[in-house]
Length: 79
Image (cartoon, rainbow, N blue to C red; front, side, top):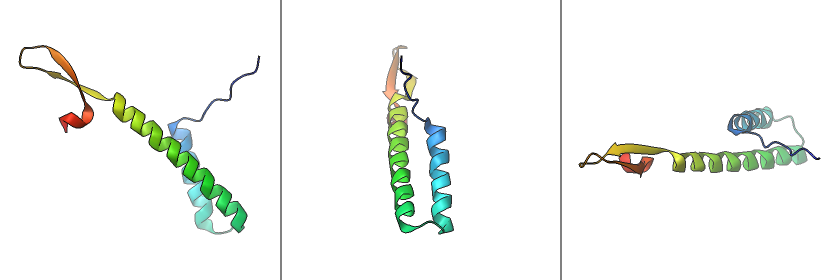
């Protein structure tokens, strides 16, 4: 059996982006390597944005309705 490669989680991706930013800010990379790091950072940021969007969709607020029943509303509806 082949083990599936585990996708990095939110925290790992965020740390990766921070590392990549630091490397790019140093300015010591050859252009081709800087572009590779930039592309990797953009991919990681896209994955982070997707994960945050999914988490936002899952977040709900239970509100008591006038008749005492509970209803789920998206988080944005309560803001």
